[in-house]
Length: 400
Image 1 (tube, one colour):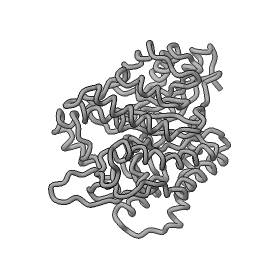
Image 2 (spheres, helix red, strand yellow):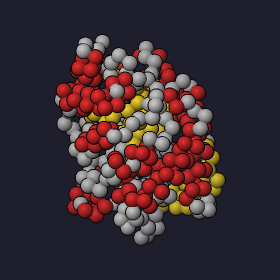
Image 3 (cartoon, helix red, strand yellow):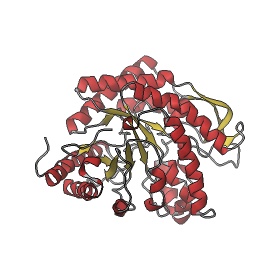
Image 4 (cartoon, helix red, strand yellow):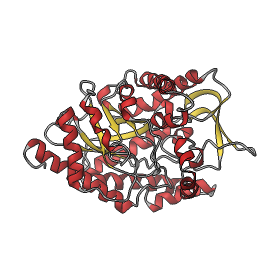
């Protein structure tokens, strides 16, 4: 894992707004229309190369492919890559397990009028009709060609942009269809570890290709508001600990310095009034054996939690990649605010142990974006400029 040796480095969480020409292919997929597969593959290659070049031109140090190759959301993309699941349309009266309307929890109970309006803006979250993923057979990995394509597209983009550091985001075992219907495994633990074993193939392929592996686990913090009450914090922590043990199992044998772990409280721009406090889960997060931790910290609900790091120590050799730019709002952060966020954390955990990042992805999936693309790039500009200001304050000189 890169460290900010002589300046504050920058990166982001991964998902970027798709260009219109690529989004059109995904719209066709969603609507069940025919499309030219070779034209799609070429559009995807060109789009990845373009977005890598744009990140490099902006000044982002550690870039991604924008998650452009995912035909579904950050977690459901993996349904194209796992055996053992089938998708069933809902019967009358059944609740969905795909799409925004399935995200039940205390926030929705508190603000039902808000969500009744907000849900109408989220129709592209799922590329399928409302339905349920069902585990019906042993889980195994079948996505070698797809992850290989994503690896090749990113590496080609890196070479063309003449930069070295790239990462690919993938889903954590505990965030793979957490509301699935079970018809095969004896219990939740057996299911979760089967997913972890299957995902190990994807994790290793990325690292073996010389890229950095990022594991996304938004469902881990988000599950709290769906469980407590009626459950307790202790119940939730037990639930989370098993999933993090499964994640560590999937990461076995992979160098920690080639990995990073991302949590957030869900990318949707809602009230988030029932989010679990970071102080209640940070010790669990630090148990994940990775080289970097990307933790949401710029939005109005969680920015105050930088003080957690007054008492919590990072595992030796790891870095903190705090969100210092939010995806929740179209307001572009002032670079001096970005710098303040970076400096106060650097003075707690060490300047070399901080890399500037974003709270979450700027697009929930191929067809849903959290901000306008021009605003997204302005936010990344602010991130880079804020890192330069922070570098000047922390090292007493301007970064190059």
